Length: 319
Image 1 (tube, helix red, strand yellow):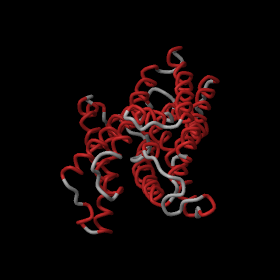
Image 2 (tube, rainbow, N blue to C red):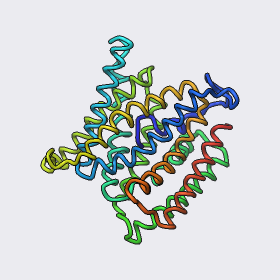
Image 3 (cartoon, one colour):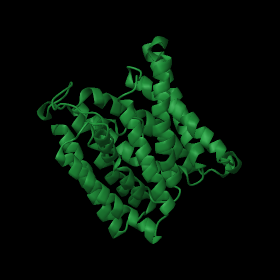
Image 4 (tube, rainbow, N blue to C red):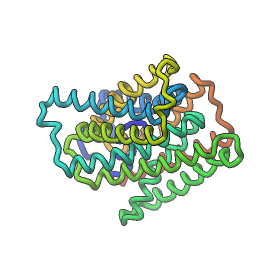
């Protein structure tokens, strides 16, 4: 849940070999380079969030990130493509609002709140189950995935149970674990409905409006929580400001631009592999930069979740 569009690959069925750049042998170096950006950038945003909320109010930081990123992206698109390119109908704007609120207020917002309580690596592993929730949503609405995908979901839920165990034992915040669980469900719902609503044709335009509206939603939540009373700009550390700048420019703009381009240029199953690479990157960076330590049960649960997502993604790639 680190940028707009995460989880959409799992929400969409695609025939293998469809789209430009499809097919293993024909995948270009540019595709692999863009994929590497998504792997590293989105995996690193968990660390960025953890550092930002050290001295910045959680929802205020999320609001700042997405409002600025959305405004910048919309401005760049209007400059490069012309003002007409960013015009949308009321229905499209309403759809972007629904998706933006589900993804950024319900999904990313709860993640930001949780990362003030639990390690960034554990947060990333808990979020990794988003594609599994999407498969369950598809099943409920009559789009029956294959047996292997359902096995992957059950395996992932077992991994989630193992990951949640430290919260019940008191070694990590149970509230933080619960926040991320609800956040991942909200992100999955947002990803799922984004394929079924009348969105703007240009995915970058859609994302700009999603970030703007989602960011404003985060701001309203921040005000409702009274975060403005705890905001003292002089008390914000330099590393928190740098982390926020990184999330705005690299996490939201660079990362999503690469992702949106990949959706048009690479096999969907290949793009979806970010879902089980990001947690690995996040755990490594949390250990390297913040000296975070995961318990044996957390490592075991994370390995199960990553394996489960790999089963689901590989099944979707074949299906």
